[in-house]
Structures are given as structure tokens and as C-alpha cells.
Length: 403
Image (cartoon, rainbow, N blue to C red; front, side):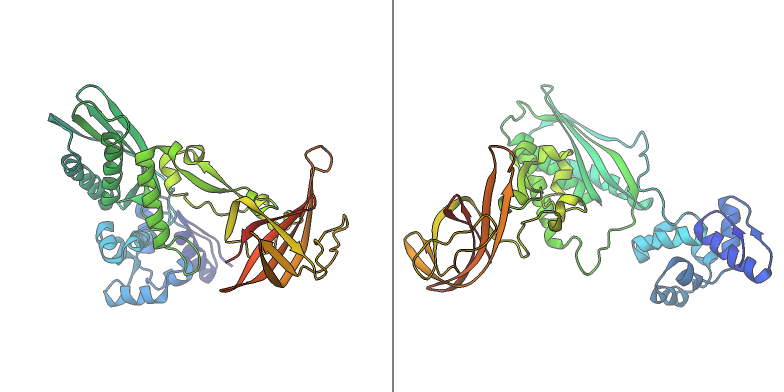
């Protein structure tokens, strides 16, 4: 067992290993230069055990002639990013002894705002977007050279008559130059072609990054995580928000509950906080909270959930073999197995069923409601269909359909 003290997790770990072999504690002087000097002679293969780097990456570094940590630290971070992507910046931080997990965000410089003033007012969208491209390209180059990425920015536009359009855009994955340009286009398009357009041409356009972070990438695992379809949908809904505003767009929000009609609710993106953040949350999946756990909702339906939930339940009849309406007692006992489902005057044979799932809500006040739900598989002319039905106050209702 050894004791090593140094700046940074990697340097401290290697110092402790050396101390274990030497039999005496090792203290590396503080400071970036002293830490980099201590790490320089170590072979790059130590990154496999102390930093979890894949052996294939280490093999590539050695074949490129980068056999020691000092060889990596001597290179420019920009060159490493160009060659290895975001992992290149991590490699440089590891080899130079700085923290391999930098703060998520860093304050942008106070003078980072970029402004374009037009001597002749412009009202054509294409001309404005063309002018904005030089601004976003300049910002993109600035962040790329520093291994950073912008996650939040403010776009401002003024007309010749003093009308303004100000909006803050956010994207958790970060925004490169093309992504920034999209936001400029959407905002100007929604303003110029919207319900309250400017009465004169645009004379000023300003882009101000307000939140930046180190560009560490957003690699997802093979299972779950965001997909290209999610990314495309987020871009689409963000653009719709630019046209209609946050009040004009609603998204599904998880509520939890026993009734499939209550599990999700449609809410305005204005209630999600940031307008742009709503574009990234177009599908609000259940979070790790108590409401998202179906086991905490007695009487809730087992998986899978219905594919279609009707806004208005359809009146139906569920009949047993003797032609009597099926009923459920207060103890949750079924009077007889369901045999026929009558929907819109047509009888359908029940070939399989499950249930009941009785629920008694608010039994203590006048809003009490006692229902029992069934899953029915019925025969139809083109095959079989699975429905969710419920009986309430002696009446049967079809509330959802399974895929």
C-alpha cells in the first residue's frame, strides 16, 4: 500500500503506485508544470488501468509514435481533437495532468457577443440568413479551437422602426455553427412571416453565447439513449416553436395513474421553462420518481400499455353465454366469463380475456368512482383485435385499443 499526493486523479494514482513499490510516500509538487513533468516519462499504456482507455486506442497511439504521456502533452489540443475527435481533448488533459472531468459549464467571455449592423435595412429572409452565416461560422471556429461548445445563446434582431425579436435558445448536446444558423433562421422566419411581423427591414443582428462547456461529446450506448429519429424530431418541434410560440405547442408529460387516460397529459411547452429546452423534451419519458413506478399504483394495468386511448369512451355491451350483461361485485368477482362484445350494433366473439382490475377512487367523498377494467381479445372480420373495456355503474365502455 502506498500514499501518493498530486494534483489530479491520474497523477495521484500513479504517485501512490510508485510509493507502494518504493515503500515511502511520494508528494508531487503542486502546479500544472510540475504535474506534467511527473507524468511525462510514463508509458501511455498506464491509461488503460488508471483512466479506462480502450487498449485499441493505446495501440493506435503507440503506432503513431506517441509512446509516453509527455509525447501527448507536447501536442496541441486542437491537433488531437482534429485527429481523434472529442476523445483527443480528454487524452491531452490526462497526459498533462489536468482534471479529466472539467466543470460542465464555463462562463463565456464578456466580449463574445457578435453583432452585424446593416446600413440598408433587410427584410428578405435569405439575405439575413446569409449574413448570419458569417457570425455563426466565426463563433463555431472560436469554440472549436478551444475544445468548447455553446449550449445556450441569445439571438437579437432590431428593425428600422425599433421593433425587436429577442429569444434564448438552448440545446443540451451543444450547438455547432450549422445548428446556430438553424436557430437564427427559425427565429427570423417566425418573426418576419409570423402574426406580428416587423413593419420595416432589419438593421441589427446580434448573437451572444451565454453558456458554454467543454466539448466532451454525447456518445450514447447501444441500447436506449437518443437516436437520430429523436434528434430530427427535436429539431422539428423547435422550429414549430419558432413559428407558433411556446403556447402553441404541447407535449406529452408523464403524470402516472391507474387510468391510461391519466398517465400522460398534454401540456404547453411554456410550462417546461426554457422555450428552446422544450424542443429537446418533446417526448417526456417517465423519470425515476415515485409516480413513474406502476407498482405504486394499485389497480393499474400490466404492460404493455394500450396503443390507442380514445378521447371519448365508446358505449359497448359485454355479454355472457346466457345473454346476460357481465357484472363485477364489490369484492371484484365476475358474474360470468365474457362471451360477446357488442360494438356499434355488431356482435364480436370474445376469444380471450383478462381481468378484472377493480379500482375504487375517492371512496370518502361524493366524487367517488368504482370501475373494473378488462382486456378482451375479440374476433373481427379481418382477424382479431384487443380492447380495453371498463364497467362503471353497470355500463360498459370501450376506452382503448392494443396494437
